[in-house]
Length: 335
Image (cartoon, helix red, strand yellow):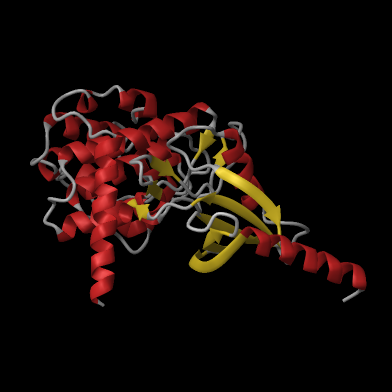
């Protein structure tokens, strides 16, 4: 290594060490790792630090890293995670976020463990309301999230929902520009994606949001399957098989396949223990034909959010997060 490169490396490492201490790996993906770090200047203040590796096949960093930063810089809403800072390390790019301990996946699991008594119907309604507010902001800015799932819904100590992980997000393309099908965590993937759609819009996020609402209500994944075919089978068992009446354009999709028909189980039966307004909203979000799904704006105005019980506010959701963290600490102390 020549002297110039060595000094540059030392400079970047010194900069990193001046900022953070106590590094803990939170997760690892295709493009890098996510760490929990503590501020060197303000001990007790924590951040999430995403490290994007330099691409070996391309000059610079993967387009997903650049796109995520660009999109999050564009968005400014309390229900969307914020980029605090970005800086270069040694052959990598760091993106600094607020560190949030609570993930919706964990609250759903806790609710299952507590026989559905940890989250009330008002709590579920309040969480969903904030998710939709964030989604309205995303869509109003011409952005597709493309990976809405409980694991990407964070909840901070103030009871504020944060939609996170924009690594698969993109600005809406022109109508003649195809998009990839390799998006969305599989259980929350809309049927048109499973059928190989190359042109899709905001309705894919609405489908995912409907799956999240259903999962909060049931404490179980609504459409669980090992692959797209199994997931489609679960979808059609509940909603019915696609045909020219309920989805006129379905046969034009690249990977369309005929599924055995039968009487659908229906959302009305599956969610019989929940309110009529709740079932109606689910029916409007989980529509086979993407052109007929409700928009995020219209979902916010749905009667489900305006009838008793009223949605839990931030103060109540903050209490839930506090209770959850206390239970986890107690469990860890017993180990």
